[in-house]
Structure formats: C-alpha cells, structure tokens
Image (cartoon, rainbow, N blue to C red; front, side, top):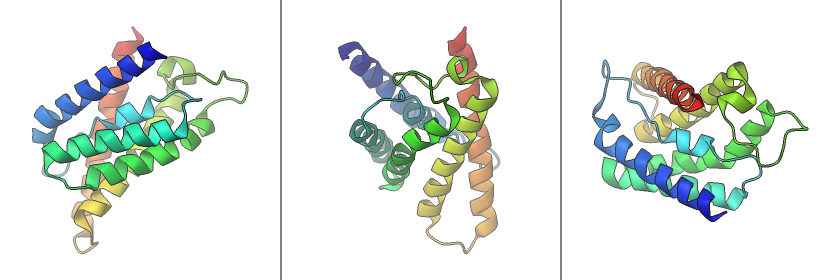
Length: 166
C-alpha cells in the first residue's frame, strides 16, 4: 500500500508540473488546450476508496488551479470527475474482474479504454469550460473549447497509455 501511495504522489507531481509548465501554454487555434491531469483521476483502481479518489482529485485540481490562475475551476471539475470515476469504470469492466484492477488499455481492451477515456475527458471538459465561461453567451466558442480540448486530451492520454503498455 505504501508503494501505491508513493506512485500516486509521483504521478501527481509529474502531471501537475507538466500541466503547469508546458501544457497550459499550448492553445491550438484558440480553442484546444490539453488538460492532461484528467489522466491521474482516470487511473484509480477499481476498489480504491471513494473518499481517497475525491481527495486526490480535489488536490490535483486545486494544485493546477493555484499555478494556472483558474480559481476553483479545475478543483470543481476534478472533484466531479473523481465522484463519477468509479461508476464510469464499472460501466466498462466485467463483473468478474478483480477488485484491484487498474483501468489500462491492456486490462480493459483498446475499444473499451478509448470509450472510457472519451467519456471521462468530455465530462471533465464540459464541467471545466462551463464553470470557466459561466454563461452560454458565446456558445460556439464554448463548444469549440470543449471539442478541441477533449480531442487533444484524449489523444494524449491514448498515446501515453500506448507508450506505457510497451
């Protein structure tokens, strides 16, 4: 259990640093910014305590908020995804799978993992950009931000998962 906590902490630190120092400065066509720290929330194993998922999710959202000048937006979106993650994961796992199964491309299969990734990323980005804009006055920009950021983030997550698989 201690090694798992250390892995979570190292992943937390690495994803926060990558998000804050590199990915926040990428804005493709004014609408696509990769929000890779969603990957941290998606990686909690099946039997992980729900209070711990919520705590870790809130912490990574708050950490990126502090350094990204988005007060509370990332924390709220991350906490929402942390709340929904166990239920979303149960949609894509088989009933007889072990309780400590990690959601990887190898365990879920490529198609299920891609769907799991897309749903998690779209839910996160929908919450993130809805809270950030706080109105639907400019709904085209809102929709382009959600679509572009979701596509870019999902692509990055799938590439990282393919690299980790090898």
